[in-house]
Amino acid sequence: MNAPPDDLQWLSEPRMLGLCGLARSTFQSWVRAGLDINDPGGAYGEGAVLRTALLVQVREHLSLDDMVGAWRDFTASGAATEFLNHARCLREDGRLDLVIEPEHAGMAIARNDEELIAAVRHGNAPRPVIVVDVADRILHVLQSFRRMAKPGARPTERRRGRPRRSQGLRAIDSRRDS
Image 1 (cartoon, rainbow, N blue to C red):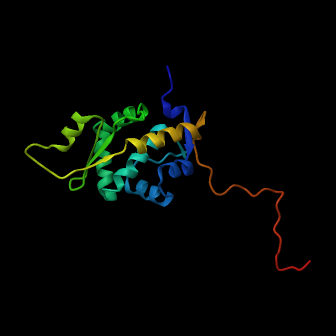
Image 2: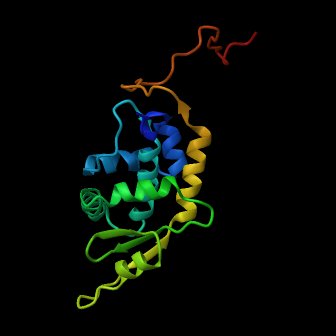
Image 3: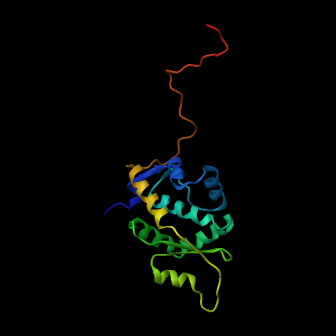
């Protein structure tokens, strides 16, 4: 049995946030708001990085509370798993559209014209949607993750605080004349 991709490689939280273009304080506010995207060891696999990159795109069009609700529905419906499966196989000429319903806190992914038409047209209940082509951004994040990721076992708990100062350094008082 092969290990899932999230168990093979990982990035530290600061590297993941930099790759996704997300400030640490924003990430922490998303976690406090109810998004289950935080890793206890501060090590993020391919799936977590791709999900975060997608959420950065969603947040540009939805409030935080609406994004949490949309993500909860997106995950429960199985669409998040479909997104990950498609994103992992994305190619340079690939198709991936994010469809957002800003007035109803909805989101969907379209991988081809048929899915896009189904996500945009609502027959007897028309509603405004925003369509964002996220294929290039997701592909860039995926390729960057694969170049930068560390192989092997992921840490299970975070290291707290700043790294200890090297013992070879000592403070010099600049006020003293020599």
